[in-house]
Image 1: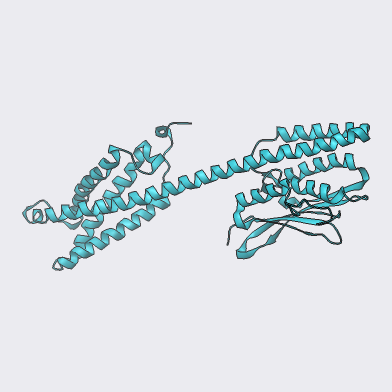
Image 2 (image 1 turned 90 degrees about the horizontal axis):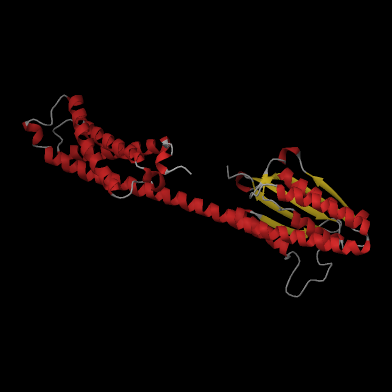
Length: 362
């Protein structure tokens, strides 16, 4: 990573414009106060001096802070530079602004009559410059802290998602190996075929880049590989359909988001049924509240259905490890906006649905 001093200067011009407008409003307010105490002089004179001195002082301080490397990291120069910058900016802004206003108004602030107001003018400049500098310093520091908090929150979210994924992948692998172990004792030929498919599936999965998101099309391809793997073991007892519209293939989703739902459908839906059943995985969008577009991911089966198999005393339907991971990942990514539901399928079986927003409120 390049040192801070070598980083290119990036200026937020919208932020600069906002600060300039605030400075102009502050200068006009000061000139209005001056005019209220000395109404014998035209208003344009104090307004010209106030705008010239204030604008130049702001420009020297606000643009000057970008010359110090620490301002890139903290929003304001650290140490002695953070104190010296506003002092130098106020002095140079006063001198330069006064000369500019003198030239504009055709008067001199340095003659006998002008020097009478010198102390008042300097006092107003020092107080006003200090107040506005402190105001911008607090705002800049607050914006930097908010940006840092957002960055830390994003890193924490990514780390949590990584942890959940590393927990989920061994869980899937152990389930597959357990299925393979059963098949070895009953049908060695199909066990060999299943092993070949598992090797290919694991190679594709482990060679994929480790990221918190990948295209929805890749997620469906993983499901196709996994379902083919399971089809070797279950044979004609299992059929499946993958329904992914072309327009949704590039949507980013967390890896292994749908696989726990498919595993759950096989284990608790199809396997308890002698005739097996059919699994359908579908992706679609729908309109949500506040003008949002919702992504709906659904895994449905025609298996035994909710409550068909006896549950341990401490658990209830839908509380398995994989489904708990799905709920936790949705909560981490989308909070209350991410929903996961289990319901009875028609005419039989179970339907698991994931819903979360793709867009912010309009």
